[in-house]
Image (cartoon, rainbow, N blue to C red; front, top):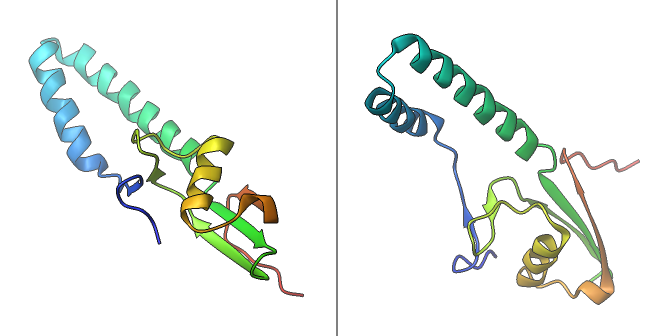
Length: 118
């Protein structure tokens, strides 16, 4: 169970963000050609960032203390500072909150949730 005081699941709402960005561009940039070029650069940067964030979406844990394998979807999970979990320390804190004893488990991050059983 996620401790919602420390971690919040963020749902990306690109449409609302782009509406806000468009409002700011309209307010700050009066030349429509420059405004269109800036918007295109912003959209490309957002797509690049989203692709990067999707690289590692899952943590799989071999918990020797309970003798089970756990898998967590961490895409969009952020730490107490609302930063996406990308560093080992953040992931270890997340796993500790999930109830794992880090001295008695192994974990890895990966980009798909496929489990090979044979």
